[in-house]
Amino acid sequence: MNKKVDLLKHYLIQNAVPILFIVVSAFAIPISQFSGTYLVQEMLVRLSRNSFLVLSLLIPIMAGMGLNFGMVLGAMAGQIGLIFMSDWSVVGVPGVILAAIISTPLAIALGWLTGTILNLAKGREMVTSFILGFFMNGVYQLVVLYGFGSVVPMTNPAMVLSRGFGIRNVTNLEGIRKCLDNLMPLNIHGIDIPLATFLIIGLFCLFVLWFRGTKLGQDMRAVGQDMKVAGDAGIPVERTRLIAIIISTVLACYGQIIFLQNIGTMNTYNSHEQAGMFAIASLLVGGASVSRASIFNVFLGVVLFHLMFVVSPMAGKYLIGEAQLGEYFRVFVSYGIISLALVLHAWRRQKDRERARRSLRGAVEE
Amino acid sequence: MKPRQILVNLAIITLMAIVAFISYMNGKTSMIYVENLPFETEAATYPAFEAATVGMEGGPPPIFLEEGDRDVLTVVGRSHALLIEELDDNDNVVNTYRVDFKNSELKGKVVNIVPLAHGKLPGWSYPLD
Image (cartoon, rainbow over all chains, first blue to last red; front, side, top):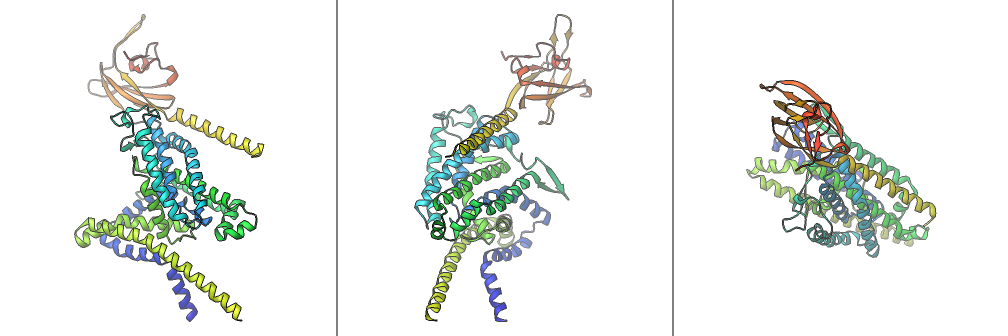
């Protein structure tokens, strides 16, 4: 009986975050008065929009590098590709492909930079990549605000600020808006399903599954479990970690392109800033931790996190009479959840260490 | 780096460059000026259509041109299929024309739909003044 209670307790602690979100959503959905069809449609749109970005976080976690806050660098690369694509007036799926190809070398270079820096900051990867994101944001703004139109020639005057250089605050992506989502239109009982985008996401999931079984994937898992042991076993630890970050950055770049093609407009100087935060929050809400994440966590997290996005303002409006209060609640819960997940992870790690020490002492005493 | 690795990397870069070029050529948009004006050749005179709707196949909604009108149409890629619907006084469709043309056939940014609809008579496209 005690064993069963312990198991239940362990399960509840392990899945505290998604359970909390499910409970809050279960209360908020009826209060918000949204129809089931509307919510399903919204969730499908948001799954197709965000899943790729969140999936890009899996590989660094596998390599034991925690949550890659440096994915915003990949998002920046994707946005630069989109700026060029818009400038050259290339539209539709070819436009998306062109933007992805333009931004790939940039994402590789930025991933290499991130990986190299993170190799110098072993054990503090998350905070380092977080600050690196802020630093590169400055560089991105400098390049886009002063470099484009002066050093980098721009052909479309509508995109450039009136002074002759620098890109305008908003970049219109009307030419590629929903081009992937509408590539294979599917409508079931009035619900539009962006089949092509889901196929791409499905392919990516297959890639992650396949990658885990490859030599490099196994090396990453070994490095993620213990760098010293992996190094002693002949695995090039730093190179493996570098590759993990490069792959993650490139995939984040593609994820940002998919995200923005769905939105249809790009906030040139801000769109990338929240990409990392939202993706990481989604993953954590799905029950992942800093050291363990699965494809299931990605999809569960995106659904739960964005369900809160959709439901909470209306729930707040009907409950308190102010939609803004619901929005404040969502922001509080969403970012609080990141803190909670990080604290839980640190607590669990400390408990594991204590348990390991106790068992070691017990073994010595015996 | 081993020679084989270098070759593979070069092949990937080449493939990406080719895909980028194809994407650029197929997704590039350009604007053409479409007009509905009378057209004369040495052999015959073709009056302008009373009115017409002009649009790209699978593209945005067509534009409406009265006799003597000129408007802008956005075209995507290298080859296009232009759909022209000739209308009468009551805006009923009299004739429908489907004309295929390529960017390489354009002599300029202006396209007169009258010679275009009558079998791409020489002079259907010319540069903007």
